[in-house]
Image: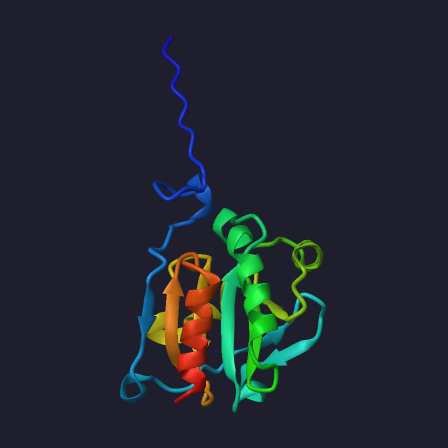
Length: 177
């Protein structure tokens, strides 16, 4: 009898089998002001159980990161997000996560504590909210959007962030608009 075994891992080459991870290319897509769609209307409950509505953050540039605690690239980029948040002006920027895969909010909250994340994450295990990003809806985690002060998608990185400096540059460009 011949027995064959297929093994996959979360790498640049393949996905994570039945977990539907499809790696993004990590390229920054910037959206010109005149080409931006309507503001993203997204609200939900955070992993801590508090309500969060992106509309309440209008007037600030908002970095939204789609993540899951079992996603290797998400784990790798989280320190960049935490550091970038600390380097940007808190009165002009906000960071928000969207957790789409953890089976319990306690798992997501534990990951946030361990990673030093102090910004809120909406808990959306059914991935129902990502459609609110319209044509900028993600393929899979990680995905990072930068919303302008009006709440419109100004930039998108589908896949892992290339670097903290890349994110800082994109956010500072949007702040300067």
